[in-house]
View 1 (tube, rainbow, N blue to C red):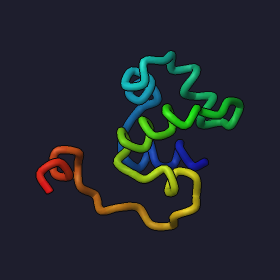
View 2 (cartoon, rainbow, N blue to C red):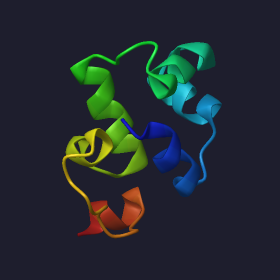
View 3 (cartoon, rainbow, N blue to C red):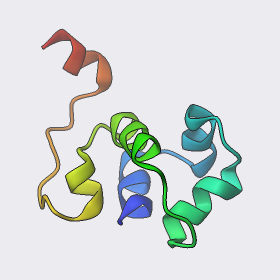
View 4 (cartoon, rainbow, N blue to C red):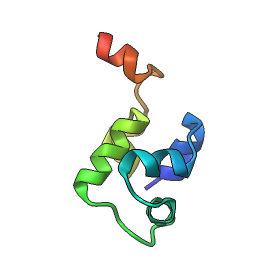
Length: 76
């Protein structure tokens, strides 16, 4: 997974995502390092927060969606 790269590109901290997920930053950090794998539900939440697909996080999809924010996506 390339969580760290995506998170940094989007301008979020580990704490931002951990707060959204309701977990400790240390738990989220272990997702980024590969020491722990998120459940499917958590992976979907992370993808939603970062506004990318699960496939993109997993490296299956090579291009990210447009740089629309969540509000803009909701409008569409």
